[in-house]
Amino acid sequence: MSGHPELDATAARLRLDTMRMIAAAGAGHPGSSLSAIEILTVLHYHTMRHRPADPTWAERDRFVLSKGHAAPALYAVLIDLGVLPRELAGSLRALGSPLQGHPDPRTRGIEVGSGSLGQAFSVAVGMALGLGRRGLGARVFALLGDGECQEGQVWEAAMCAAQLGLADLTVIVDANGIQHDGRTADIMGAAPLAAKWRAFGWEVVEADGHDCAELIAALAPSPGPHPRPRAVIAHTVKGRGVSFMEDDPNWHSVADPGRLAEAVEELSHA
Image (cartoon, rainbow, N blue to C red):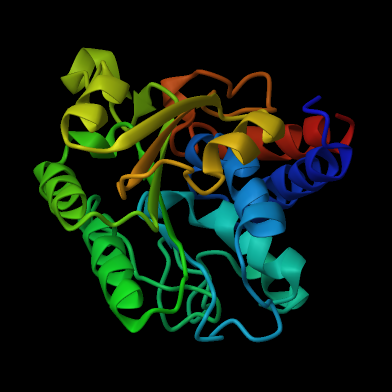
């Protein structure tokens, strides 16, 4: 436990809701969604300034899910907050549903469409620049995957953000060590991630991505005198919370639809 029982309880509820959605669809990305639950919980229930009843409020902080395949976890948050109606929960990936496999900005509460990895992070940089020039004081948070950090566009955007001194931009890297085709270290290892972001001019903090207290501290506004964007390297476990999914590359996507009900059952009694 993190010392924040309400946030821990919220994360547990969202983890179960996320798995129920994926089980109903028989498809999705459970591993990538479950590794990000505590990150999304701390952002949306503690750190971010936002109004669920008015998701287009001009002065809100913005959240960009750059690793868009983790959309079920974000949908679970938006439904839990009342931004989206509860009855949509069973419609993940269904024809005509706003809960598509990747976020769509036509869906209430979604800031940016994200499919091709790396692109939404560039949009987040533009958001931070524009909001800063408007003087709104809004922060922008972007969640990336560690496999996504293999994209050249990520590092172009990182250079740009540092050059512009975008201190209101925070990137969280969901560093679970696994991507679609296997372990990131075997495919195109990005380690040492912290050193790379630091070399690109970012302030860097590392945290246990499943510990709400560590995430709260890592996501707090920087007290430093020099304006720099911040990168939080959140060390997580793919498939967190489901014993047979944890740290298993096969569960980046649904490895066996027949076991999804088993995953729901396990989380129901966690």
